Length: 85
Image (cartoon, rainbow, N blue to C red; front, side, top):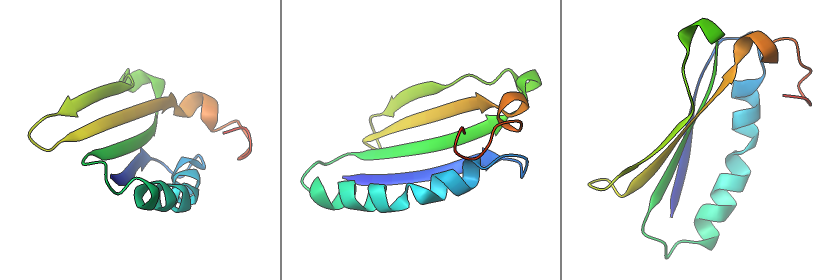
């Protein structure tokens, strides 16, 4: 199994830093489930509400990849502490 991630966020929140903190978890899960022939790709987005971007999940059969596009409101998150985010 391959686990990978990306972020789309401004510097107003800690979303990118929190995403980086997940890397050891991704590495451990990838090692533990090596026999699984699939990729899980996460995109963590923290965007202004005016973008009206919604979270989605899709499976790309030709790449054998499940994409998790997770979007949260920058307008809300910028007021939260790192631990609350």
